[in-house]
Length: 510
Image 1 (cartoon, rainbow, N blue to C red):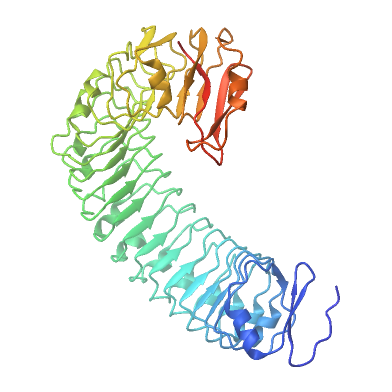
Image 2 (image 1 turned 120 degrees about the vertical axis):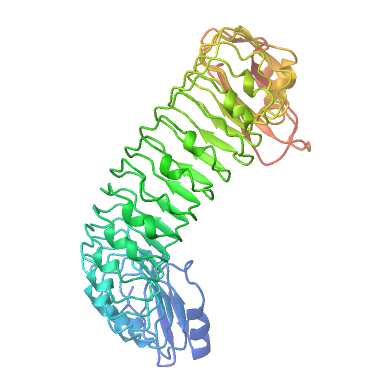
């Protein structure tokens, strides 16, 4: 569509749908520009006169050209993220700019930003930047995001002494010496680069959050002086020792997954540590953690742990993930009074009775050697996973599972539920019991069940009219509505619909 001719008092915008908006007064223009235009799908701004706005939001508009924006010299805030912009030369006249978002575009150079000397916030992530020399004079910058670009050299950042937040993740950085003078930084993201040495970080004593994941770092000793550090992420590196972080007395969260760690001794005095992730390492002794009374959530998945220490003073630990280890005895976990989420998947556990009276919310013992769960009645448990265990019982007593909402007992030898089995199914939301020896399907009432599955080809329904009864339900009742779809007479999928009703449906078990 050709641009229509408008008089000098008209300000026109051409939209993606070839619709032209005409604003005939400066007041209309000001109101139009001051709003977030994300719903109008603007592709190109044809003409702007009387630049009255100080803020403009043009996110996700499919914009390609921004030449006309050069007239808006009084703008202090501009959002152009998620467009298709390649050239930002029009921005060089906006010397009043303090906040600029040009993320998620096709920009390969930023020389136009050089005159913007009072810029305080810049988001240029997800572009095609390889050099950032033009940013050298921007010493008022407080927050800078250059993540997900192609940057190899960051010497131009050395002058940004006011920086507080810096994001350089997912670039091509190998060395970071130019950061040593940026002593006001409190948050630094360097994950997914090619960094080997972090010696220059020892000068950044104001750091509170540091992400060094996905690099080639092996030595953490430069971090020992960063005693303000609150959150540290060092996963996917070449680290075989935590030496260097033992003095980080304010550390609250540590992620060090996928390394070569063996000893946890450097952690023993980090009394403020609450969240700890050490998955996929070589750890076998976790006794250094017993005095960390602030620990809330611990993940030690896929290590070499065979035994658990007693945590005598921890009253707040609510989650522990020990999947993929060789733990046999779960008795020490019974001392953790606040424990609610336990993952013991793929261990060597035989007896789970020590945890019987705990208020567990989520309990996973998939792939262990549990011989019997028939006496295990977790009064507080809401999710219970027994999948692929070597259970010997042929029936399960579930009369105490009053709060249980999801259970998986697939690939066991279960063929029968006993003790109020109808009530058991009524209160469930998800039941999975595939590859067992269950022979028949019976009828029951279910108000909450969302999914039940049993793909054993030998099972059958004892009431061929059940599916028809489901279809004839009155949808105007006030109960919660669920609808059953029988798939090959083996699996029942139940989906919530808009209204509510009490209905009869099929269930596997007898």
